[in-house]
Image (cartoon, rainbow, N blue to C red):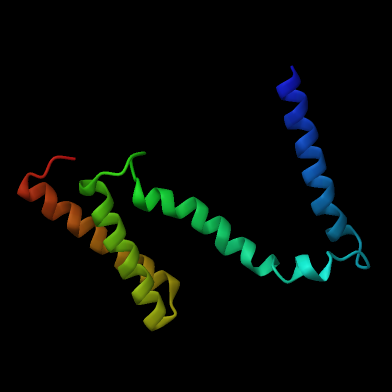
Amino acid sequence: MFELLAIVLGGIVTFVTRALFLVSKKLRPPKRVEKYLPLVGPAVLGAIAVPGILAPRGEVSLVDTIPAVIAAVVTWLVWKLTKQTALGLVAGLGLWWAILAVMAALGVPR
């Protein structure tokens, strides 16, 4: 019961602290905090994506990790060169699927 209360109270506090800045035009986060807000999105994306790339099935194994890392690097390179997110994603996914197909054809166990 205590755990449920802690989760509910944590959710309420989190909601209220975020909603205050949306409701009031005069209330702004402190300058020291506001300076770092643009970095929150990339940090969260990295926290979600990196474990999926380095340990696709929940554990690091070369058979699963190397194709994912290569595809991620190619995705980033294509995006960096073209500035087109969709093109980078298509290139990375296409390469990842191609690597997996070659590995399957060679009989590499997964």
